[in-house]
Amino acid sequence: MSDPRLAVKIGRVSLKNPVVTASGTFGFAQEYNRLFPVSALGGITVKGLTLQPRAGNPPPRVVETPAGLLNAIGLQNPGLTVFLEKELPFLRELETTIIVNIAGFTIEEFARLASALDRAKGISVLELNISCPNVKAGGMAFGIDPEAAARVTRTVRAETSLPIWVKLSPNVTDIGIIAQAVEEAGAEAITLINTLAGMAIDLKKRRPLLGNRMGGLSGPAVKPIALRQVWQVYETVKIPLIGMGGISSPQDALEFMMAGASAVGVGTALFHNPFTPLNIIDGLCSYLDQEKIDRIEDIIGIAHQTG
Amino acid sequence: MVVETAEVISLNGLGNDLFHLRLWAEKITKQAFPGQFVHVYCGEGESLDPLLPRPFSLFRIQKEDGVLELIFRVGGKGTSSLSRKVSGERLQLLGPLGRGFTESHYFSRVLLFAGGIGMPPLYSLAESSKGVDFTLFYGGRSRSDLVFLDEWQRMGVQLQLATDDGSVGHQGTLVELASSLLLPQAADFYYACGPKPMLKAVKQLMDNLKIPGELSLEERMACGVGACLGCVCQTVDGYVRVCTEGPVFPAEEVVFDE
Ligand SMILES: Cc1cc2nc3c(=O)[nH]c(=O)nc-3n(C[C@H](O)[C@H](O)[C@H](O)COP(=O)(O)OP(=O)(O)OC[C@H]3O[C@@H](n4cnc5c(N)ncnc54)[C@H](O)[C@@H]3O)c2cc1C
Ligand SMILES: Cc1cc2nc3c(=O)[nH]c(=O)nc-3n(C[C@H](O)[C@H](O)[C@H](O)COP(=O)(O)O)c2cc1C
Ligand code: FES
Image (cartoon, rainbow over all chains, first blue to last red; front, side, top):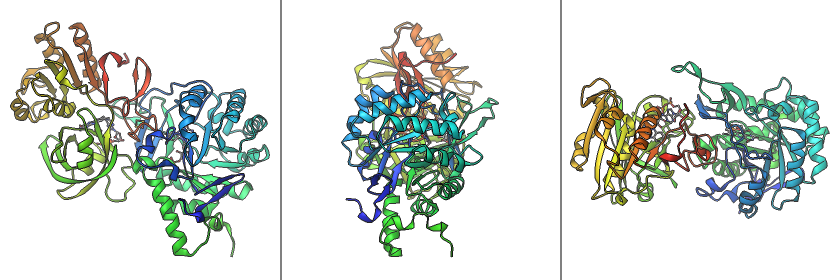
C-alpha cells in the first residue's frame, strides 16, 4: 500500500504517489517488472507510440557523457495495433496509472492515435510527445512552434475525452510561450523536459559517435536546466506540471516539486540504479516524517513563495 | 535476473591492461549460463559518474561455490574504476542478462573463435560441456593478449593461436589461420566472439565451409534489460536488442553492414 500522504492530483488524474517513469526508459513495463513490482509507482509512462511500427535509428544509439546520456533511439516501437494487442493487456492489469506517450509525424496521425486509444480500456492519460529530437519529420517541429503545438493539442482534444498532458522540448528560446499555447489549447498538464539536443564525436573514426549523428542529452547532467524550466513554466501557466530531467534521488524530486512540479518523472537514473523510483518514494515519506508535513502536495511550488 | 551485491574475492592484473576479477555472487551464479553477461556498476559509492553500468561476459560460472569470474580490459572510466577494487569490497551487479549459447553437448566436433577480449564467454561454454572435441582459434595483437592458455590446454582443448606481430602462433589473423587448416564440414558447429570485422570474416568462412554456428555481439548499452532500445543490432528480422534477444545470435540471422 502506498502512503496516502504521497497522493497527488494532476487535474482529473489521481496518482497514488508523485513518482512516474519517463517515456522511453521503461519500455512497456514488463522488463522492470521482473526486478520490482512496478505497481508501486505513481504512474508508468510507456515508450513513445506511433501509428505505424518504426524501426528506429541505426546504432550506436546511446553514448555515456559525464553524468549524462546521449540517446538517438528514433522512436523504435511496434506501432498502435501491436501495442493494443500485445502490450496493453499487461499494462491494464497493473494497479497504477498508465500514461501513453504518443508521437505523430502529422497532425492527422496524432488525431488517429488519440481516437483509437480513446476507445481502448486501461489508459488513464495521453501524453503528447511534441518534443522528440531524434526523428526527422514532425517530432520536435511541433514542440518549438507555439501555433503548431496548440494545433496538435486542440486536434487531440477533439478526438478524446482522456486527460491530455503535453510534453515539451527544452530546445526553445522561451518555453513559457509554448506552455501557454498548449494550456489555452486544452492541455490538462505539462510534462517537461524532453532531452536536450546534443552530440559526441568518435576521435578514432573522426565521425559522429551516434548513428543518427545528433541525439538527446538526459540524466543528472541536465538537472539544473530542467529545474529552471519547471520553475519558469510554473510561473506562466496554471495547469499542473510533471517535472523530469536528471532526477536520481529524493532530494532531486523535492527540488522539482518545490519549483512547481506536482509529480516527477524518472528516466535515465533507472539505468544507474533500477530501484531509483522506489528509493525516491521511500525518501519522500521520510521527508514528510522529518519535516512533519501532512501531505506532499503542500510543498508543490513552495519555493516561489515570497517572504 | 536480479540485482545482487557481490563481494570481490580477488582482482589480478594479467598484464597488458587485462584484469581477472573473481566475485562471490551466489544468486546470479546460480541462474547463469555461458554466453550471458552481467552489468557491473563500476562507480565509487553514490557517484553519478560513470553513470551507466558496464556489460561483461561470464568467464567462469562456478555454480557450487557461487563464484563468478570475469576478465576485462581497462579502456575508459568504468573499467579503470573497476581495476582499483580490492578484495572484500562490494560491487553491485545486475544479471544474468541476455540469451546465452546453445549448449554444445549436442555436437561432437566444435570450433571456437575468440578475438582478444572475446575469449571469456567461450571458456565457460567449453568448461560446461564434457565429451565435446573443441578446437579454439584464438587471436590477438600479440602474445600478451592471449591469456589462460594453460587452463585451456588443461581442459583438453586444441589451441590454434594467431597474433598480428607473430609473437606466438601464426602471424596474421585467426581467420587466415582457420581457412588454411579447415576443410568443409570440419566441425558440426562453431561459436565466435570478438570484434565485428572478425565475426564477419568468421561467418563468411564458416558459410563457405558449410558449418553452422553462433556469434556473440557487442553493442553500447544503457538499461541492459530490454527497456531502452539503446543496444540494437541489425538482423534479418530488423533491429533487435543485443541485451535481450542476444548477445548470442544464430550466425545466419546477423546482418553486417558493408
Ligand atoms: C555483451 C557484452 C559483453 C562484453 N564482455 C566483455 C568482457 O568479457 N570483457 C571485456 O573486457 N569487455 C567486454 N565487453 C566490452 C565492455 O563492456 C566495454 O569494454 C566496457 O563497457 C568499456 O567501458 P569503459 O569504462 O572502459 O569505457 P568508456 O569509454 O568509459 O565507456 C563509455 C560507454 O561506452 C560503452 N562502451 C565502450 N566500449 C564498449 C564496447 N566495446 N562494447 C560495449 N559498450 C562499450 C560503455 O559501456 C559505456 O557506456 C562486453 C560488451 C558487451 C556488450
Ligand atoms: C533512451 C531514452 C528514450 C526516450 N524515449 C522517449 C520517448 O519515446 N518519448 C518521450 O517523450 N521521451 C523520451 N525520452 C525522454 C525522457 O522521457 C525524459 O524526458 C528525459 O530523458 C529526461 O529525463 P531523465 O533525465 O530522467 O531521463 C527518452 C529518453 C531516453 C534516455
Ligand atoms: S540496453 Fe536497453 S534495451 Fe538493451
